Image (tube, rainbow, N blue to C red; front, top):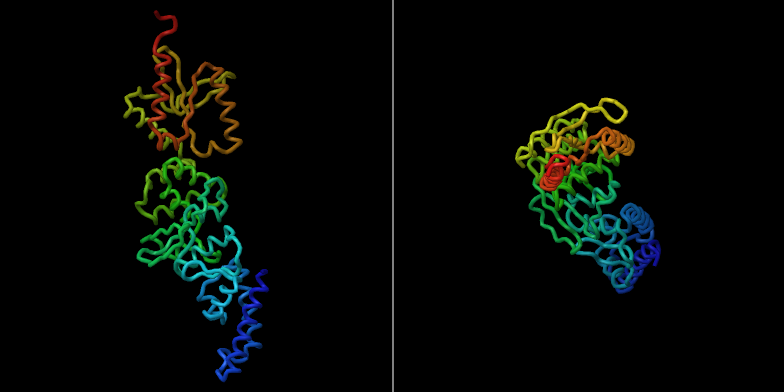
Length: 349
């Protein structure tokens, strides 16, 4: 049944109910129902349009629809109940938007979409939360979530500060969504990729994410997230190289030369992040790439530059700065293989 027919049927049942009560000598539940039902009809239509046909019992009461009206519509199979608080004004399958609205309305007035769910609403693609809807509520909230709702109780969640002022359904700010999703991620690598993607897609800035991280305090993997944000802001080279040098020291590898200068195949001077002298006399250049190197034009320049260095006789390896921090064992393993491959002088017996 179309939504507007269901709403009209609701108010027709109200009128029929009142006529029946008067014929039996009982006062009608609402006086002047014909005059007022038109206004209620309009208010419910507006509410349904704003909230994807999902409303709470409290909202229905506010527009003049009482519990027995809801009961009649559910029995007539026009509407459907979800949980304790939510009424869906149809009987069909829920859309993604409706699932999100149901999740928020069922929990609490202060609830909001968060984490990967909120990030997806803001347009962050490639980090699918599946059918799970993530919702945040203040610590201590008595919640009765539906099976497909993941509730996060948070002491640092302040609705007046962390929720978007106008979006519906209620949703945390994009910065809060990204930082929470990164903190709740299963791996450091996934968390770093999410932060980088949010900036690359223009959803936020490193400075705003850094402020949100400061407010969040000592959340999970905060040190890694701060380092990644520094990478994105452009101060990554010194920070990435410091981490790389420390990694080499802990792994027992020779200390490389930083910011070494070498000529490429065309004779142009090139600055290298780090340079190793290999046992057979060859030179190994290692480039540590921050997130800025993911930009298409910069990536193309890097590839051409690498070709020039190889033509000039250098061995070149590249590592994303995120990998240096999140999977150091993998980086060390590749470096050791490079040293092993050049362990002997050419022609040695």
